[in-house]
Length: 393
Ligand SMILES: *Cc1c(COP(=O)(O)O)cnc(C)c1O
Image 1 (cartoon, protein in one colour):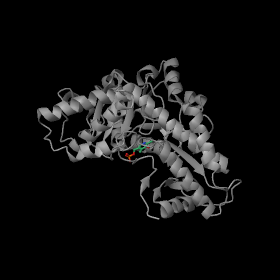
Image 2 (cartoon, helix red, strand yellow):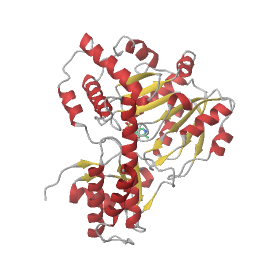
Image 3 (cartoon, helix red, strand yellow):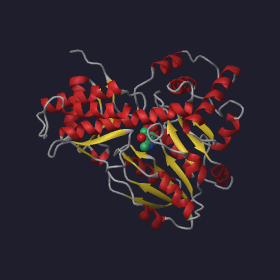
Image 4 (cartoon, helix red, strand yellow):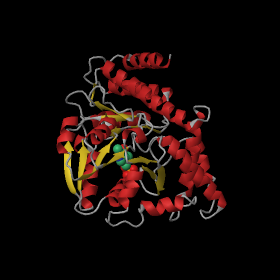
């Protein structure tokens, strides 16, 4: 059979055709009224998409650039910060904060789990300036309880700012920045927004803007205050990624269009969509006799991390899906390589995409003669069908 390449990765994610067309047509100069109208509209829509009244800043960088910007703008060398880490992206916070001279306390939980609120409470100090966390840890498929962390900071009357890497959290899990006391919420273009990599964005609270007045870590290209000043005039400080901004506009229109033009409702639909695809996938894997990596109740809807049967390298399944169907799923990152594989649901995935990957997984499982309880064709599909029917009736 012919093979159609399909991405099932938690970034980059499949591209929205309307966004691809918008990119191809984005032949505009960035110091013109035409661009200012586009940028102003996209920034306003992005606020609705994030679900905040705070200003949103767009940067020409991958998601890590916005993570770095949050550190360089909000800290000074010697500041005590707290990193909550349970995977590769949590470890990235430790790396960045150390690179900027922070005194870093780390609460870590084993891969595939989340930290206890008691451990966070015990590690929080009077002098903690910033707390860094992921909304969903894409390397393990685990969701962290950001709301509870925000509540803890309020209860403790902490001065610490809460910075959330929601790069795979936005559009896959409910997040209420303003109500939960999140000070910086970070997203990336190649995730829920269905466009190529190259843009990151941050929503920034007034508390965080105030903090920036007194911090002195070095920053130049990623100076958020400078970007904010320019954004108010409909421009960016330097040459923006015009094509990606046009694509972002088209994607936000599409998401709004899923709910009669209401972007806030559209975002909720997108979250519900990811949750349904994830629930279908979990049910299928479990029915086939595969185990999930995330603890119950803390599964990220961005991607499902599935353990291979004992004694089997997950790379065999990853390669099987690729060679038989040109389906791209991700193996474990770093030392998790070989011990899990991840199927994404973030962004432009629907019912049919999910059914397709489950069907393909069954084919690969049978071809590889995986030692599973239930190797019969249809086992995973039936479970997924039932979940879909139940969730959408
Ligand atoms: C994708 C991702 C990032 C950003 O990675 P980049 O490669 O810099 O875009 C950061 N955090 C999480 C949780 C992610 O999934």
